[in-house]
Image 1 (cartoon, rainbow, N blue to C red):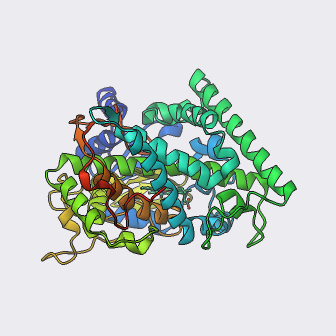
Image 2: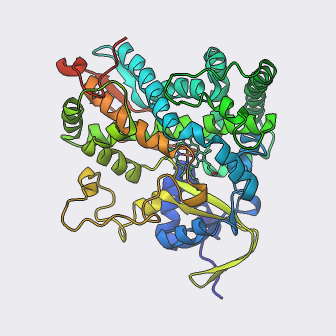
Image 3: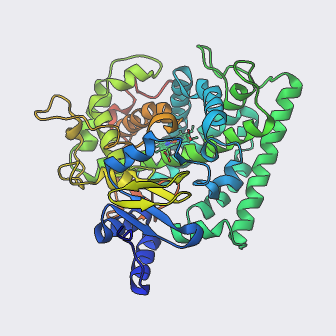
Length: 464
Ligand code: HEM
């Protein structure tokens, strides 16, 4: 049986290491271009088998019993915890995911959109004509504020400043390039110490809140708004509906929702703004559609779906810039793939980014073309779930996908309606591991607000 291709000589290892050092997409592209659809790279605990393309995605994502999260996302264990969705499999994972579901579906998703839009509005209100803003960073902060409230409730959200400072310390380590990232959690270093101290700070506050609510009979179960919203995530996890959860299970769910939540949504929105401003005519079309939207008060998922062009832009941006670039797994049993034998216990990774940029799946894969999502276009063929998978697949599909699917078009529409932005970052470099971010920011100059910005319409800013 032929050896699995991959960098072996010092020169090859150096080139591959340098590519991953630049960015995760560059490292993955280097392996695909140099070694083909199956390769292996790394040593000891950092050795990963990379399988690229829809066929590999189907094999790995359809066979959850062989391709496990536990053992693959271990570097997140000190942060996410031993009972988190990303560190567990099977029945315990499914039970916890079901318990959290009300936070992320229907009323939960709409309440999230309302809070996130309100937070984005406050950010836009602070922008002044002539000001340079890092659009990605400021939007991500707005999303983070709203998510703190959504997942942890008003009492913890009131401590936002101290909590955010700690969350930033955790991200400092999580955004290291892949080669260092894999080692950074294992070896002692100042950054690791800071991240571990930060997570104990955040978790102490969350445990205090959980215990207080248990003791007080969960007064935090305030309804954030009438209309069927289940309350914040802590309340949902403590509720009597479904199986009881331990304090640790509640803590792990809340921390993972925070860490896995605001970063990819901030990334998805940041890249959607970048792609829209960087492609002639797109921002204007987004604005026209926002102004045409029918009048109404609340933002519902059904209303957001009517923003046809805006949804194409979001779908296309999640294709060219998927916030989650690669999905690792640990295989329980060895398996054969394309003539190679991959041994039991190996780390395996598939890549959303490589799949979304594959010329055998997409025509002109590197071009940003929202119209490719027009289902009435001649020759339109919907992608299969393994050709387009920004939110993953099956039982391990993203728990926040419903929130993101409403929030992203709603927020993009709101921005196009209310702002004029002159893009100043021309060739953003990739950064970030948990989510793909513009490494050195995404700068734009704020222009005068369009005169029609405050006119009526379903996605107009709500009157205060
Ligand atoms: C644009 C926004 C988002 C994108 C593109 C995204 C993407 C993904 C992807 C691709 C996965 C699967 C990873 C894998 O198979 O290895 C995933 C899982 C997950 N996501 Fe998201 N996500 C987004 C927003 C959110 C939000 C808002 C939350 C918070 C509620 C969240 C929480 C999670 C969690 C907890 C998992 C693990 C699910 C499980 O193991 O069953 N994500 N996400």
